[in-house]
Length: 469
Ligand code: SAH
Image (cartoon, rainbow, N blue to C red):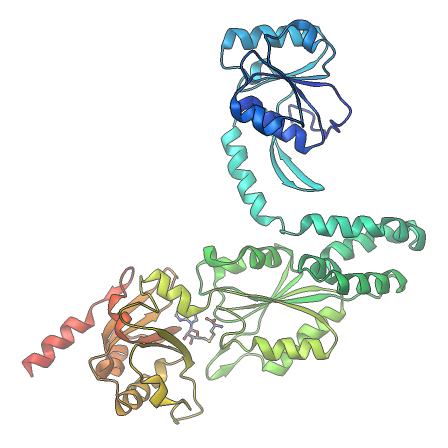
């Protein structure tokens, strides 16, 4: 550290800005936002500056004299001309002001950091003037990690500060606030449920310390590419004590969790049920009762063929605080990755997601006549094993065998595979290309547009074979 960071209350201070252009306007804006009423002095002040700052700053449109800045505690020099900037920095310093010269760290008594501003929460990033661009890119990353309602959370906590001080003995107070900020009450405030949070807060203050409740977040991890996580999903993954995850959650996503978080695999492969559904729900409930922050991490979206609804029901029935964070579902992720528009003005006015999963050897129980309708894109999840049956049902109900199909395996992942062809050949396509899953089947005119990483062109080969036969 080569500078001392501190937050200054500028409201009752004399602050001067020399300059009349954009740089001066930017400094003035920030100061005003923090409660200051700065004095801007320069012979020529821009139209924008005058328009935006009038009423909030004192504007002296005149050649500055040393007397104008003689009692300033902070002086900002925002001038283009090097020599002028140096001269005024000297004058300010000798008058006793702390001086900041825009773009000249060598002349500065203090530099202004890059900031994340969320009301009460301010995060300042300084590089000692050496790398403002790096500070800015770091700021963007931090910006993404700070919950949108952080300020509401701090206001909420602030409103209880005195009550907590009066009711909870000092030895327990720190642990109380730790539980508050990492637990279900803060989660409720961040989710916008302030009424529920107030109720829980009053209960928490009146509960003997030590008896605490955890929270469960049911989180969608998307189809695999970690960049497709939502910001909220990332935040929950990074703050979880325990993560229960499925087979379809990629390793890169698990790697984002805290190093000391427990990770429990509860996934299923079709014939090999790792942990039955009831046991997963029981485990989630037990962990929450232990006071843990639990993330139930699921491939894609938790509410699309993900049994998220059943887990949510079980948690709510047990009185556990539970929240759901959506994820990019496989169809949406695969479509974007392969340039396949699920709806298209010319070819498809509807898109339907169905599951191809069925007990034993039976056909999936679906309304085939409706699904075979033209101008509908059909996306089948868990359909690889039943592809032949699905194709014959659709053709029996009126779709032609020439309807384009695309099979996308491991979509958005490194080992993505795209197989294209026609509905009549769907089963052979899958057999020949060795697709095992996870894969979706896309059936409809738009499937012909699928392209990109991992494309294998079996379709052409098959067409040739057909014409030779
Ligand atoms: N909740 C998940 C779906 C779970 S069902 C979601 O919203 O995506 C499991 C099925 O999802 C798989 O059989 C496969 O059809 C599909 N799937 C999941 N991830 C996939 C991926 N990366 N590529 C292709 N299909 C995928």
